[in-house]
Image 1 (cartoon, rainbow, N blue to C red):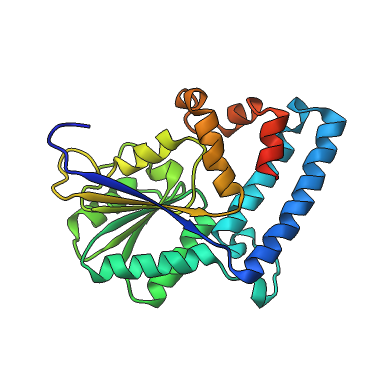
Image 2: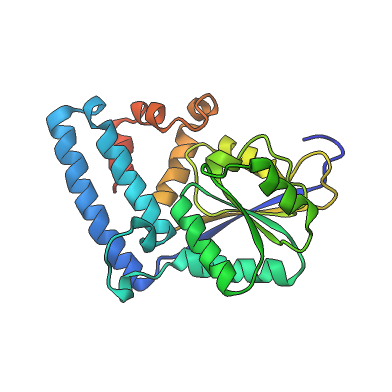
Length: 247
């Protein structure tokens, strides 16, 4: 870290599933597990990569919010423990006069956040892969201190931007490689930042998100050279890794 950068504090918050969400998660996990191990038996580990990635994507989306799956669900299964926690966190950050970058891999999740912010008259900037004028979105947030929130997709907003107007960062969902998250955090924690930076990483406990954190520890050296290439990551999975992720 550069000697003149202010302090950065990282907080990992473990959040439980809501009751209906937990039931849905168990159902989806069981179906994914059956599918993955059936394909593993038929095609082997190398031939199962797309099936594994698809199953993990579905489980990760469910951890974020059941509505990101965009499938019909009864009301009792449409709640999200993490999203409820996020709303409280955002309300506290904004009410205390801070400004925050919020990163997610899923644009549908960012849209749900935008709906909440609009409903509660909280101004925000927005950037994802479909944003035509990235510089305008960045300029809007940096120059208007009355905009407290910037919603960004991890891949579109994780590198190359100067967002020192924010002193808080929220990583709503975990990426495979912590280095990618760190690059995103550095949009705020960089030269020009005058305030201490608080970084929140939200993890849904007893789910694949917690398994991803465990995998990060086991494969830390390998991940340093892999950045955000999911396909290459899956190539490194062992049968034990797959069992752990779907366990």
